[in-house]
Structures are given as C-alpha cells and as structure tokens.
Image 1 (cartoon, one colour):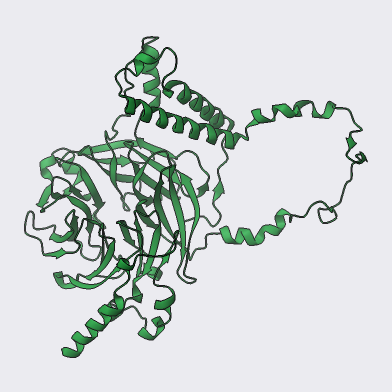
Image 2 (cartoon, rainbow, N blue to C red; image 1 turned 120 degrees about the horizontal axis):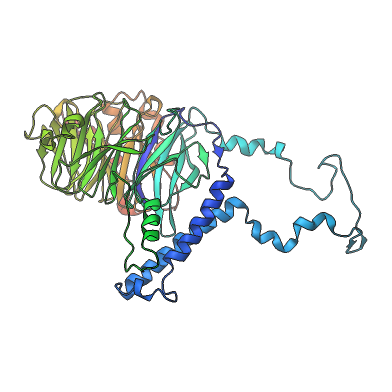
Length: 531
C-alpha cells in the first residue's frame, strides 16, 4: 500500500544523488548489531525456555518470525555493504602473488596478453564507463522535475519511493528508493536536519514503532537515517540487560528515549518558518514539537483525550498549530502557551473521528476537517467552538485525505476509502461539486496537490493497491470552466483518450471506477443552456 505521500519542491534535489559509502566503523557496528539481534531474539534455543513461558504458541511463532526477518535484514545489509569478505577466503587471495607461475590453460600454457585499450581486447564486449553517458542522463534529476515521496509497504518490507514526475513529457517513474526500518504512516519533506544547519533535502517519516526517521534524499542506498527522533534507546536497553547479569527476564521491555512518543506516530508537519522544527501527532494522545538537528523534544502537548490523527502548522504564523483527534475535536493553539497550559487550546467539536485537517493557504483564518463518515467541514479560527462555515457530504466512506491547491484558490480535492477522489470549488464560503474520479489505486489513503506554479493543477494520489497515480485535473471540463487554467477544450480531445492519468504498477482498471467526466460535462452544459 501507499500509506502517505508528499510533494518535494522543484530544484531542491541534487541532480545526481550521492551513493552511500559506509565507513569501516559503521560496517563493524552493523555486523555486531546483526549478531546481537540473532542471539537475543531467536526463540526456542536451549536454556531460554523460561523467557518464552508467558507467550502463547502464536505469539512465539510471530516473535520468532519477526526476529528472524530483522536479523536477516541487518545481516544482509552489512554483507552487501562490506562485500562479504569472508566468502572470499576459499580463494586464498592473500597468498595470490605467491602461487607458482606457468599455469596451464585448457589448450596449453596460458600467457599474459596486454592491450592498450578495451577496444583492442576481443574478449571484452561491454562498453567502458565513458559509454554510460546515456544511462547517466536517465538518472539525472532536472530542475524542472517534480518529485513525489511515497511511503510504500509490502509484506516483505517497507520503502520510501522517490518518484520523478515530468509534466512536459507526461512521465512518472521511481528514481530510487530507501529501505525503511518500520511501517511508515506519514511523511513530510524538509530542508534542514543536520546539526550544522546546512540546507539539504530530507524526508521525515513517522512509523508504527514510536520513532520518527529522517532520511537524506540526496543519498542513494543509505542504510541509516541521518536523525532518529524518539523510539527505542538501544544503549539504555543494553545497559539494563547487563546490569541484571545472568538473571533471565521473562519479557523484553522496550526502553524509550527521553521525550519519545509511546505509540505510533500518525502525523507530521514541518514548520517552514522555523525550519529546524517538526511537529508530530501520535496514537499516545500527545503532540510533540521537535528540534530536528538536535534530535530533542522541545514540548509535549496533551490537549487531546484520544489518538491525534493529523496536524499542520499555520502557513504564516510560526507558533500556531492545527490538530485533529479521535476525541472528535479540532484544535488551534499557540504552542508556546499550550505547552504550559493545555486549556489554552481553542477547540471545535465535530460529529465523528477526525481523519485529516488542513489550513486554507489562501485564507489565513480558515481550516478544513475531514471525518471517518466522509464529511468535510470548514471553520473560522477566530470563532472558537462555533458552527462550521459550510459542510460537505463528500463521500460515502471515510474521507482519508484533503488537499487545497497552494496555487489555485478554492480548488479542493478530497479522497476516500470509497476509492474515489472528488474535486470541489470552495470559494465564497460554500462548496460546489466539480467532478469525481476512480483513481485505480483501490481505497485511497492520501492525496496532495503539487505546490509549484508549473504544476498547479497536478494531483498525486496513493492507496491500498501499492501504486501512485497522478491526475492533471485540467483534463476535467468542469475545472477548465471554473478556474483560469489557460487551456482550451480543443487541446484535450485526443489527450483525454490517451492519458486520463498516469499510474505505476498493474495494468487494467475496474469498470466501477471509470471516469465520469464526460457525463458530468454534458450535465453541466445542459444546466448552462437552461440558465
């Protein structure tokens, strides 16, 4: 599945990302970790029965499988990076130069032939490295490319896929990916993560394992994040084990870092005005404010009474944060005041559990909330606890994502478990339906408009079927009729047939998910003529 996605601004990525080169110290540490994991987490070994006596048979089987997979992953990573020197011992390479000369070939004595270049060697048929310019060109990230960060999960592992989208050529492909350590639930791009404050390109990822991993996007094949916020404190856990000596424990207890979330991290938001600051929402009912380069928790907010599902920093007020929770309350607060007194948070009650929240980037006082029953409400932050400005019965199932175009005022997209994405015009404090589309990704979990002017009408969507889809919503006649797209209907006669959307992965589509744009265009034309 694609559990979350986020656009990365154009021109922020390195043209040619660096390849990760682990140091000898890192390799040795990975070997030791792999060995330690294999020793401490392998069940049903001799003399360790009492450590498992409190577990049922199913728990033992699941724990053993998880431990084996984790140990295998760590060992494979170390083996791959180190080149697995142990496997070369059988060739006695250390004494290679001491072996006797005059080795007999298959057809007689083998001589040594030296060629001035590979072009003269009849046995070399592959091109030299200099001939790989075409391949290098394909891997270059151009300043005009827009990048999509997608959290991708399969049964055999989790990755952050970095997609390149070229709207000029209409292409969408995975440029590279990063192997993640835990199930990813949310992602946001940020440009600062290192202690020296140097700008870069990073992805902060909230996981099921209580920690937030921050990865360098300009480094390919990296095996470790540049920062880890919260999560398990392995050093403290190791010290606790050693302090107990040989006395065996019945259950292994996680030791968390100071300031860590205690349950899964469900939402993230990067503060673009305080670039080192990140906010996180968790199933442990708290919101935390992090100093990312220092990997420290600055504030813990406890103004909600149930899981905090989503949050977002205000686009122009650096200290103002919007949060949404399963306690059926949306909240707006100044984190400086709420850190000392949770009652300082202003709240708006909604009818059901909150799935997502978002500030209107074109109206600094308004924000939107979507719920598990498919409704979307708009509220005025100056009117605490008041009724919504308008309500949309957007979907028949949970509305899992909302996105207002950062470039086009009033253009709203909503996504749902009903497998559709819908577009709305929310100008003038009211919502008018524009169009709907089945995106061929199964149940839709995440949706986001591109924030660049060049791709103002481009929408990225991810869902259950582990693929990313991109929709140029200008292809909708309803969008062209309502917003200043600068495009004419004649341009889309052939394009609508050839490229309704671009998808990665499986071919084919369900008939139930077919686009209804043509039918809606006919209805809208009839309504205009009637008027």
